[in-house]
Length: 131
Image (cartoon, rainbow, N blue to C red; front, side, top):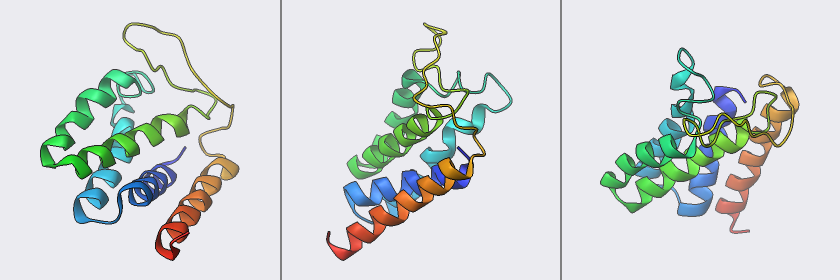
């Protein structure tokens, strides 16, 4: 998935589950994009695994429970989104090089990215309309 779709999905899921607040907004946007900081390294390995997720999101818990949960939701949504792509993710790296993927969309697929944005809009609509 592309960055804007990751950010939209991480933000909307966090707000839907935890409610809007400055800490939820900040951590959801940062942590929804954080796994892609490994683009120059072993992309889809070094930061696209559960171990990196747990270590990095634990930092957000220092800001409070809502920030920590928002970071966990956003990071998880990133991993889930990338598991829908051709390249998938390596969830247990460095202990396993087994790739995991749920589908085979290209990262740039309009169906995948616009679908994530549409889901994000639906989540926010449901949250603020009380559905």
